[in-house]
Amino acid sequence: MPDSFNEILRRNQLSVTDSRLAILDLFTQRNAALAHADIEKATHEKYDRVTIYRTLQTFVEKGIIHTIPTTDNSVLYALCKDTCSNGHHHDNHVHFICDECGTTYCLDNVIIPPIVLPEGFIAERKDVVVSGICKSCNRTQL
Amino acid sequence: MPDSFNEILRRNQLSVTDSRLAILDLFTQRNAALAHADIEKATHEKYDRVTIYRTLQTFVEKGIIHTIPTTDNSVLYALCKDTCSNGHHHDNHVHFICDECGTTYCLDNVIIPPIVLPEGFIAERKDVVVSGICKSCNRTQL
DNA sequence: GTAACTGCAAAATATTTGCATCCTT
DNA sequence: AAGGATGCAAATATTTTGCAGTTAC
Image 1 (cartoon, each protein chain N blue to C red):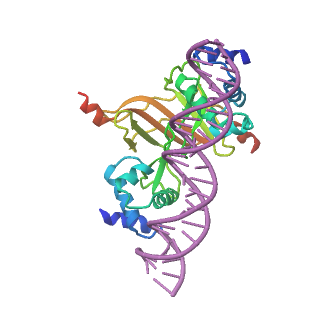
Image 2: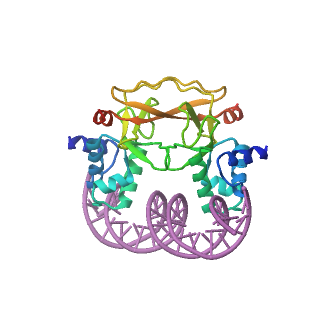
Image 3: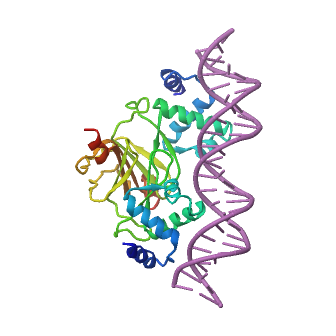
């Protein structure tokens, strides 16, 4: 597995460093969206706050991760799939935020139906964020 | 027109004050989403930064305005329609951010088609943010 | 060896809180 | 008159920038 992280970094002309591998690993482990603060905590402050900011920024620019819009003022990041590259992401991306546990999922295989805009508006990118109860919280409530 | 602002405030058990009327007026004039900084500039720093923070927070709680999720770290607010109240908003709300002029529109009459989620996920609220070229930027490009 | 990356310090920015004063009702 | 709202000061949190030292290649 860790080998594929090297792959990702090399493919994007980035040096392979501790912090970058750790952050990639974290995203993979969690398989959910993460905020800057989550990463800081999860790595137990092993890496400087600034390094995390810069790593996230670099990853977004390279199209390794993408940001997820949220209704509160937080910024979330999640791994991009292969179809993304250099900041360009595919349109049909659904995110799900659980009101119960707060976990944010990337539902890559949920299709966004076409949305009809008023005359004159041209859609370039569509972000859909659904919130409610996620699969695992739903289960524990039974 | 200004009379209806009084109405809105009274209906929500809020005192009618200068800053609140000015902010309501601004949202109506612009007919677009505004950030804290936009309001500060537009009112030419007549009101304290803190007052604007508190006013926006109060308005959100009362369901007079709502926040709009954005991909960058900014927080945007827009007027709610009558169907919203006390922090509860209707599901079918589409927002449009213009990549050209940066204006954020509330497209209240655009219908969000149903989205099929994976087994076990329960949708409570749906936020759709479309970005691209807005009507007026589209026109000027001809 | 060189360029890229990190960590520290500090600056800049954004947000929150407490409290005295003022304004709405 | 009383409660709510504002403005100021200051505390806290978040993000950005510069630079020297370190690491990857």
